[in-house]
Amino acid sequence: MKQETVIKRFLREGISFSPPFTVSELPHKAKLDQNEAPFDLPDEVKVILLERLKEYQWNRYPQPSLYADAKESFAKAIGFSPENLILTMGCDQLIQGAYLIAGGHDRNALIFEPTYPMFSHAARFNQTNITRIQLSADEIPRRNHINETENHIIFIVTPNNPTGTFPEEGVVETALSKNSLVFVDESYVDFSKRTWSHLLKEHPNLFIARSTSKSCMAGIRLGYGIGHPDIINAMETTFTAPYHLSCLQLVIAKHFDLIQPHLKEFANIIIAERERVSNQFSEMGISFIPSQGNFILFKVKNPSYIFQQLSESGVRIRSLHTIPGLSDYVRVTIGKKEENDLFLEKLNDLPFK
Image (cartoon, rainbow, N blue to C red):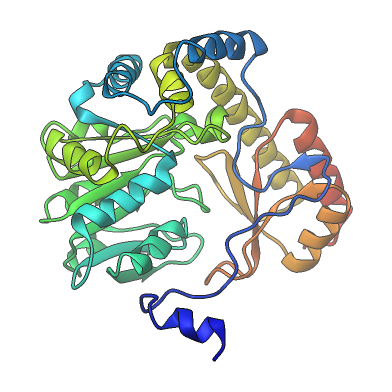
């Protein structure tokens, strides 16, 4: 009997043998495919953080006091109370946490697509039923979509990835009127400057997820969630805090006040570059979705060809041909000015219309 057949006997239904998610590591001149920041922290900040890290024993697990100190300092830096904050290994862990505390067998989650694939991926592994609202690239979630279904979790990404758009006015409020955990993903809030955190006080079923990856620290994998203390406690219990994070992540969170000014500076540069690239698209006659993120979704005549030609010239963008409704689109992350200029130059040499 084949080993694969034997293994399938004890694996849960729905677990596949497909290869894990991978990204290209080919040489490049402009890496514009993963919505990362093009800027790194200054060396002087890294030196300070490493000195702080040396104060802790690397052969010991992180102690609860370090997690508590990190939460208190991080909460102060972002303007929230520690009891309303959870620190996690990126936003993916927050998505998993939402399913663990509110999803599961015979429970339903609402997802607007196209969006970040982890929402549906995590639902499958947590045996949660999905209600999918399929939208086209230029459509946005609307209030009537919320009213048509009943769900235990409602996921709303604002601005959405990969479209960069906000939902219709009142969508979040309509979702909050339901007996659901309303998970608002604000991973790109640094670029949109718009948040729904003002609704937290009046709505205990609101949970906001954010990331530090988009403005600078993708390599650190530090995310955070803001919500009612009962939701925070449920997630922390599920993750067995503080052991779900490393000393490195907790030290960085503890000293986030050193990092935050640089993140804001980087985000403002990206916003200016996003508007410049958008204006260039308009001049070139390229159809695109106006974005509030650190990326732009745009339409081309032959996306597979465009993707391949740009890759061969050292410019990496994101192909979206496998996503329903986006077969004619590709996505470019906003990089440094010289990276964006190279991308525009190479794109202009191709038959994109």
